[in-house]
Amino acid sequence: MKKPPKLPLDENLLKAIGTFVARFSLLELEIHFLVWRLLDRRLQGLGKRITNALGFQELLRILGSLFEYRTNNDELITRMRKLVLKLNAAGRDRNDILHSFWVDRPNIEEALVIRMQSRIEGFREELLDYAPKTLYAKADEFASLLLEVKELHYAISNTSPSMRME
Image 1: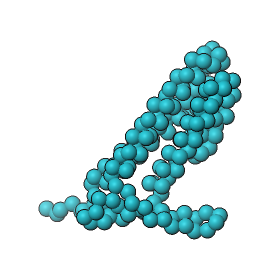
Image 2: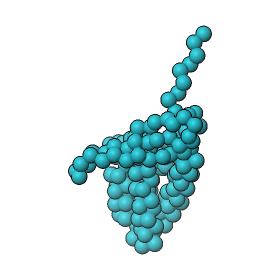
Image 3: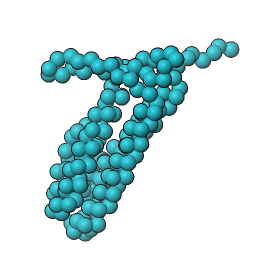
C-alpha cells in the first residue's frame, strides 16, 4: 500500500488557514444577512441576487449606503462607519492570506508567504512570515467582528421605525 503524499504545508498551518477561512466566511455571510434585512426582509431572494454579484468592498459600500438610508440615528451611523473600516481591514487580511503563495520551511514554525500584486503603480512582491498562532489570532478577530455585525443588525432592527414595520 502506498503512503499518502506529504502535504506541501505543515498540518497545523493548514488547520489554522482553514479556521481563518471559515471564520471569515461566517463574517461575510452575516454581512449579507444584514444587507438583505436592510433592503427588505420580504425581498430576501432579491437581496441574495444583489449581494451574490458583489465583491467584498462593494458589499461594504452597499451596507453603508442602505444603513444610512434606514436610520437617521447618528450614534448608530457612527458605529456602522467604524465597523465598516474594521471590516475593510479584515477583507484586506483575508486577501493577503488567500491570494498569496505559501512555501513550507522545514523545522521553522512560520511559513513563508509570497504576496504578489499588480497595481497601477506596478508589480509588487512582499515576503511575509505566518505562524499558525498568527492565523488563529486573525480568525479570533473575525469572530469578534461577527459579533459586532450581529449587534449592529439587532440595534438597527430595533431602532429604525421603517424596519420595525416590515
